[in-house]
Structures are given as C-alpha cells and as structure tokens.
Image (cartoon, rainbow, N blue to C red; front, side, top):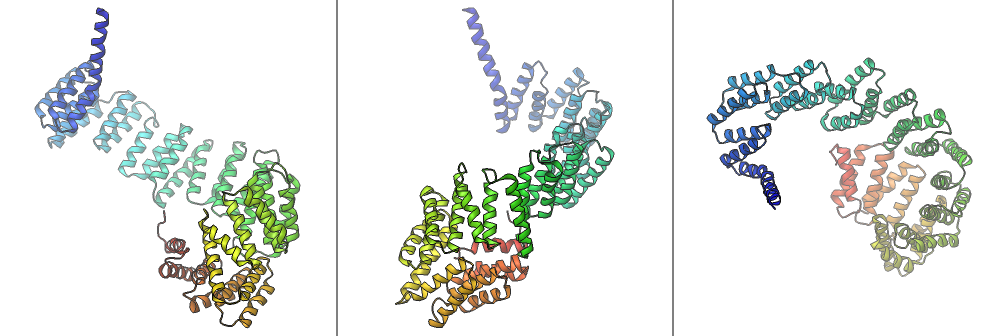
Length: 601
C-alpha cells in the first residue's frame, strides 16, 4: 500500500512537471515575464542545472522584464561554474546588447568564439545561437573556425550554405551546398529543392552552372555534379544539353537508359521534338532490343515524330509516306496486341486524316476493335474513329451501329456522350432535324464542356433556320455540305454551298456558308482565302452567332500558322472585350495575356 501511494505521488509530480514548460510558455506569451522566469528557473533546477534551454529562456524572461541586474548575476554565477560553456558568453553578450552596450556585447561574443573547443556539437550549437540572434557574421566565423579545428571543410557545409542564403551571398551559398553534396550523394534531391527555392534569377543559375563546371572538371569521377548539371539544363529548358549529359552519365555508369528516357519524355512534352527523337533513338539504337525501355522508346519515338511532323502544318506527301512506313515497321515488329493498341489506333487516325487512305484506316481499326482482351476504353475510342471513317465513305448504317455500341456501353461516361453527339450529328447530316435537335437539347447538360457547347450551338442553329423558313431545303442542303466537308469532299461541298447562295440569295445561312468555306480553306492550306472569309463574317455579320467563332479561328490561324502575333493578339483582345459572353472569351483572355507577357499562374 505504501509502495502504491509513493507511486501515485511520483506520477502526479511527473505530470505536474510535464505541464510546467507549457505553463512557463503561456506566462511568457501573455507578458507575465516574472512568473515565466520563476517557472523556467524551476525547470532548470529540476534538470539539475543541465538543460541550457531552460536557463536561456529564464534569462530571456528577465531581459523582457528589464531585470538586468538579476540576469547578469545569474549569468556570472553560471560562467564561474562552467567557464568552458561558450553558450553562456553568447547569453551574456545578448544581455549587454539588450542594454544598448554593443562594445561589451561584442567582447562577450568574441569570448565565445575564442574559447571554442574541438567539439562538433558545441560548435554547431554556437553557430545556431548566433543565427537566432541574426549575428550572421559571427555564426560564419564560428562555423569556419570549427571546420579548421576539426580539420574537415565539409563538416558544417550545410549550415554555412543556409547561413550564406540568409546573408544573400548566392555564390557562397552554392559553394557550400555543393560541398555538402560532394560527400553525401543522398543529398542531391534536397539540393535540387533548395536551388529551385532559392535561385530566382538567370544570373544565379549561371553561377550554379559555373561552379558545377568547375566541380566536374576537378572531380570527374563524382558523377553527382554532372547529374546536377543535367537537372540545371532541364530547369533552363536547354533539353539538348541535358540529353548530352544524360547520355554521358548513362555510358559512364553503364546504366539502363532511364535518365535518357526521362529527358526524351520531358523534351517531348516541352515540344522540343528534335531532342526527344535523339533521346529515344539512343535507347533503340544503342541499348538494343533487350533493354527494359526498348519498346517504350520505340513507341514514344513514333509518337514524337508524328508530333514533330504535324506541328507546323508544313509537311509534304513524302513526309507522310515516310512516317506511314515507320508505323508499318513498328507494327510488323511488335504486332497488334494490348501493348500496341494505342499506337495502332494512332496509325489508323493518321491514315485517315493525313494520308486520306480511308480503306486502309478502316482495315486497321476493324482489326483492332475485333481483337480480344483489349482495354474497353481503347476499343471504344477505336470504334468512334472507325465509325467516323465509315461515315466518310458513305457507310451510314455501320457508322451508327458503332456509335450506338459505344453509347450503350458507356452511358454515363464521356465516351457515351461523345457517341450520342456523333449519332445526333449523323441525323442532322441526314436531314432528320427534329430528332437531331431533340438529342442536342439533351446533350446541353453533358459533362463535357466541349460537347455541351457544340450541342447548344447546333440546337440553336437548327431552331433558327427551321423557324425562319417555310421550307427546310436550304438547311438540308447545308447539312449535306457539312457531311461532304466531314468526308473531305471539298469540291462537292463548295458546289453545294454555292448552290444555296444561288437558289436562296441573302439567306440567313450566308454567314454559316462563309464560315464553312473558311474552315475548308484552312484544311486546304489556302490561308489567304481563309483569312478573307473569316474577315468577311467579322465585318458583315458581327451580331450573328458565327462572329465569335470566326474571330477565334482567325486568331488561332494568325497565332499558330501565319506567325503574326500582333494580329492574333488584337483578335484575342477583341473577342474577350466585345464578346464577353462567348464560350471562347476566357481562353482568349488567357492567350492574350500570355502573348502580352503577363505572368500566368
């Protein structure tokens, strides 16, 4: 029983003790410095006068209460007991500084450094104490002297790097961060984070590059510096030099090509297709077919070449033939299977859209959709494309069959909405306007903003042109022309559109006809005629529904193809100012600000 009572008393006292630091802190924060000082001194006593933190906090309370006499007395007492404790001299110096006695303060700070022992822990604590007091020069001196005492230049490198960061000395900060990593490769990711955070100007990155070059030359066996250089070039968007270093690192370390593969992907995403191609070709040609990344490199090489070819709209038929052959070689090597399903779908689209080889595209995609074991989303996307290309060839029944299959399987998903929209569009082409409009009305609430906007536009378009006429003939002719455009039968489409203008002069469809012609001219790369048609709509029909579409399409034409930034910027501005309710207004404002050089987050 006596033992139990003793244990309870001990636990209660332990509980009270554990609450004392919080109580002392509360007193201090509420400005009750005298009470806080009493609590901290009790804690210091309970620690057998060993916990420096409590003593430092005790003195801080006395200083806050301006009780300098008591503070000095207690500090002197502690120095007599522990003259080797350099932290006490810092505390003493802080006391003098609080009384605006800088010379006496400096003398005590100097005593701390002069009495610095050959002890890493003590040196580190002293440096940290000076940092807390923002005495950065003294902290620097403490760390540098400590490095000499311990005969190790790197031992306090990380602390020095952080110190120079605080001082704004970028050159020294970089030097000591690199010293830190030089002996500890595990620090490299930490360093990258710090450099990203603290280097904010091109000049600072140039300083890092200069020091990395020097380190690489002086320590060629330390590949970490080259790895940092590779990372630096990526930050500066110089992917070609990053690739050169990644390739060198891969060869020196006899690695599996992972770094080079990463550079290829980064460069491709940044639209530096030349570098991406070189990176992927290094894997396929130098690492060989047994390499882990061989298939992925082949796959991404083909995709990158396609992006490179199509980015500027200036490809030739010879370019198309060459890329088509590369697709064939790829599929001959790997076959059509789950791994190559995406590239097979891409090949089918390429044949139809850019080679205009609809029969071969149909054949490729038919083989794909009939294959067992493929991802259902891949099959659904292939079916949608296959249906489009069958429709281009006039096979309406097969088209609607595939659209309906996707609609049924993905009822509540984007693919289902896409299929329903295409089926409604098919009814529009066929002249079944009322049914098509009903479907478009349902699709107004589609989760896809693009489908929703298109559905709204087409519903309004049908309603306006059916209600204005006693006959649906002009609208039916226009829908037939739309189908001819979809089928890439441009001459026939022009003929149909011209017939509407002859048979129904000054019809409400005139702006729509001009818009369709402008889009055809774009596809035919007859850009002067496209510009003329878009401007015709903008000037003659500024209040019609096609006006904002024409402005945006023309702005994109100037922006992406004709490379006339001034004209594009002017049109983007006109769109979001004069047509603020347009679905293109937000995007136009964004592009305008980018072209103007605004910082877009």
